[in-house]
Length: 239
Ligand code: SAM
Image (cartoon, rainbow, N blue to C red; front, side):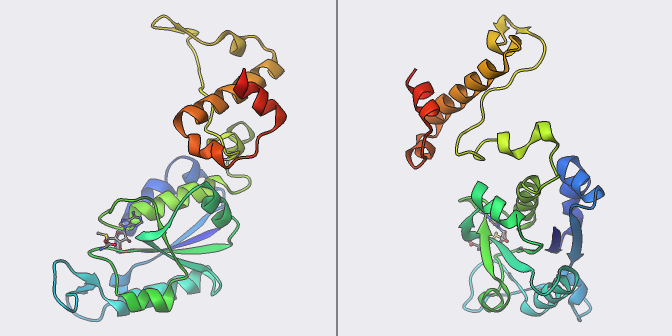
């Protein structure tokens, strides 16, 4: 997967490119990252990337020309068929299914806005879709782009080791994950559930599934409402 990042602050992306699961994916060559900075496509002495909005009002907007040229450069690195995604609080909300769908793309161009956003005509001309990471407003699209990179990369084959499989995580099978425990066996008087020490893999599987079902019913009943249940799941939920 090639992530071509269009941003005024490329140095921010070290958080995902240099650390943890995503950093490892970059090192292994499973993920390729390129940067285009609109500021590199300015022509004036001050390297201006923002301008006042027509009609007045507070704040500035990103200028069209440098941004458009930075997107063109991103297309050159990522390939002309790469999807162009503008991170925006007005976009479709990112969720598990969307992350899985995006993980099947060969290349994504992620455009991070700043200031009060970008000129609407640039969105119409250059952007395939707008994507939001939640119903709140950030100061810039970089953090949102990093959330997309992380969530999408985890879904790519070969990125997580077997024991860390994304299939076990919350949302993958329409349920929240079960609770987990590590050593010590007793912490402040609280014991690890006996079944997890039993070595009985079938019992452990059933316990985990029951916990995941119960937890989802308690915390996110909306997830169960639209989900088809197996006979075993129905029994465990009713127990
Ligand atoms: N005036 C814009 C609005 O209300 O829709 C908000 C602009 S915001 C201050 C600056 C940039 O942050 C946006 O251009 C976008 O790239 C990014 N951004 C802010 N909130 C976001 C969110 N929830 N999801 C994705 N990107 C977001």
